[in-house]
Amino acid sequence: MQKIKGTSKNWFLICPARHIASLFFLLIIISFYIFRSIDGFAQTFTEKFSFPILHSLGSFFNVLPFSACSFLISFFAATVLLYIIITIYKLLRKSQKLSTAYKGCITIISLALFVFSGYCTLWGICYYAPSFKDRSKIETAPIMTEQLAEVTRYFASLANYYGETVERNDHDIFSEDVDELFSKSPHIFDNISAVFPFLDGPNLTAKKFFPSQLLSYMGFTGFIFPFTGEANLNYKSTASHLPVVIAHEIAHQRGVAAEDEANFVAILACMLSEDDAFCYSACILAYTYLGNALCKVDMETWNEISATLSDGVKNDISNNRSYWAKYDSAITTASQTIYSGFLQSNGQALGMRSYDACVDLLVAYYLPYALLGGHTS
Image (tube, rainbow, N blue to C red; front, side):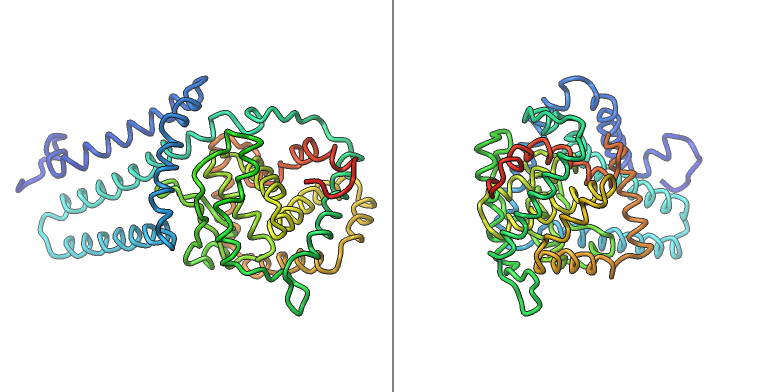
């Protein structure tokens, strides 16, 4: 085509394949928004399509000793940047600037639609499938302050107990080998899957995300990448919290989409794993969420329970707080705000606060153990 006359036919013929691809991906996205809330659709779609593909992708990329996600994101970003540079170069050298610019825009749009349509079908739909709470039949109820205090005290005691069983450095800070923690990840869900069979899935190894420091600046501890089915972890974050974060991302791999439920499932999976390092990490996270809720309604009791924590537990909690304080910036605030909006757009009304909403499940499940005492997980 030598000249653009402005007709729709001529615009289409500049790059017909990219127009067709864009329309196809757009149709998938529109279908996602139309069908996602229809009763039974998300459950059937995830069971027959999304989960099998996620598990197959995860199994395929599991043979790699590194995160394929890290490579693909880097490659994709580099390719898009190179394409933009080449397009700008062509705009400066060619006479048909309008058609060149249009082709470049359509290419970028089609790539964006491809990525988002893939996300919608592989992971976004999972937010509308039956929740863990629905499938597990765990009943939650309004929490009384005394109940919250009992479960908080229970996990404080467990944190002290398991805190004595883990490796510590000269500063009395958790120092279990990170590589060993990752090597244990494929079997952390073995016992919880026996209790809740719908959590069964392929035993996949959690992956270290490179560069993890970027995630720290964004305020993230990990994420699931639906295009490879991998659980990607910020391995540079605090080691004491890493085991339960690994379990959190594996919970996503097993189909638990909601963040509050993934937190609870991660804690329960770690406690049932009978691995001291994972149990300890779960206890710290559970105590933190429960304690944050308790101090808002009964500061005196929270202070009393907090005072019972061992020096090692206090050191690990303080170390984690200090780590994230180093990365607190405008970048963190912006990324957290964007992600909170993302969660809300997928039916999680609390946004980032949904991570803390696992308190109801913790109290409902662990109150009987707390009332009995001891160290039963």
